[in-house]
Length: 331
Image 1 (cartoon, rainbow, N blue to C red):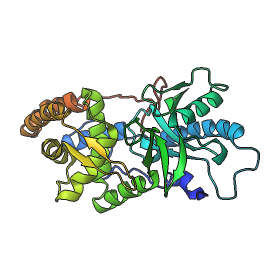
Image 2 (tube, rainbow, N blue to C red; image 1 turned 90 degrees about the vertical axis):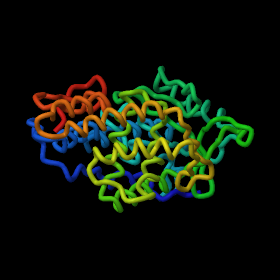
Image 3 (cartoon, rainbow, N blue to C red; image 1 turned 30 degrees about the horizontal axis):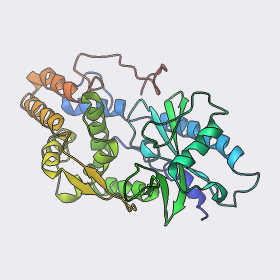
Image 4 (cartoon, helix red, strand yellow; image 1 turned 180 degrees about the horizontal axis):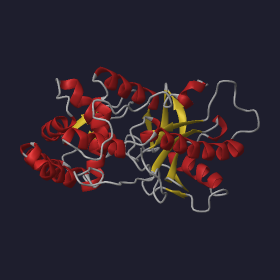
């Protein structure tokens, strides 16, 4: 299968727009201004995305030198795609994981995903002494400035890709099917239909998930957010959308959703309900404090839910590095 070269760049022309909020202002006159500042902190900058893709590209070059003989890639063919949060531009700052889907050459495509992981690991071990196979067998982790690049060996399959997944009775080989191009296209469509709100809601939910350690995956939140917006008209203000989502999500799950272009489903359980319920009641209280005289109280409630990146009136001089362990100021 020859992959069109545009696949390696589809994520570049997909900017994240933080629109509908006041311009940066550290006085935070209302909750809308607080949310605008929060999103500018939690959504990675274009420079961060470019740097992350460059790190993934460097790893891909190392793999290509070993796995593909010179000039063995046909014109227009690619051997890798940056996927996941960075590829779909739904990561949150600072970026800590960069997912790289690497297409194995036909001569090295094994029956079992475990053998494919060993092949990738053997090559990368020559360049990165600390490279290891992830505990969940999802890929090979290569340390980098951002945290790590997770390299997932893959094989083209019916318009999508086989990638390592959990071994089950129906998938004893450990392969599952994904279609990152269809996923990205579906997300862009939802964003265009709802004026960019799905992606901003997802950014806030990921920050909440990380802050309170809610037992739900980022991918499950992505699917739920798309389902949330297709079901009925939703409030435009982000604060109202979050409150609605936590109430709706507890009624909607457990549920089984099928990702775009995939053959396997994603099962979302109810383990995260307690965290969602706690968030719902805290921000409902914050909603009652939204008048100007109680703005600080409202902001403190939102910070307790979304984390320290949410500003409180009176705070100033906040700095956030592009990547963990690096200094830098966010615009």
